[in-house]
Each structure stands twice: as C-alpha cells, then as structure tokens.
Amino acid sequence: MKKLTEIKNKKWVRIISNKYLLILILFFVWMFFFDTNSFFIHQELNDDINKLENNKKVYQEEIKNDKVFIDKMKDSNEIEKFAREKYYLKKDNEDIYIIEHEDSIKNKNNE
Image (cartoon, rainbow, N blue to C red; front, side):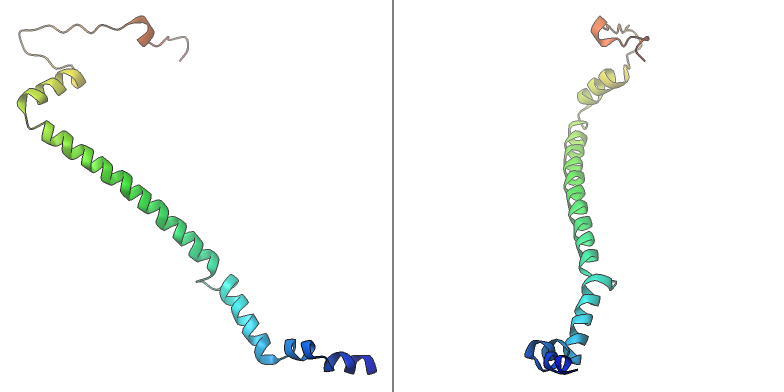
C-alpha cells in the first residue's frame, strides 16, 4: 500500500492521470484515426485529387491536339488526304492497291 501511494505522488503519474489530459488525448486519437474526417481519409482524398489533376492535364493536351486536327481538317485537300489514308476511300475513276510487306503481315500461326 505504501508503494502505491509513493507511485501516486510522483509528478509524472499525477500529470498522466489528469482526467482533462486523458480526455484530450482520447479526443486527438479519435480525430486522427477513427473519425470520418481522419488523417488517413484526407491522405486518400489528396491522392485522388492529384490523380484527377493529372487526368485533367492529359485530357487538356488531347483537346489541344484535337483542336489542331480540326483546324487542319478545314482544308478540303487535307480532308481528302485523311480519308484516303485512313479509310482507303477513292474517286470513282481510280483503283487503289494496298501493298503490304511481309514483315507487316501477321502470321496466322502466331495468333
């Protein structure tokens, strides 16, 4: 019993056993780990924000490239060139020959 009273009278035990300090520590632990707005949730949200900002940059670059392509396609010669190269379109009085090299043809055995 005497040892217990000696321990209770020590300064650090009195500070730690202070009910206000205990409540304050519990409050901070709760807010940091368990609350819906905890530190970890904020970290996840910040990571999501960074990913979305990176996606935004990528999409803005794609929009810029598409605008350049649209401006390029306003010329009728460019439209014709694009249609011929991409979709193999032709005029009524001409023939198109598609030449494929051996190294560009996929082997049917490998597929």
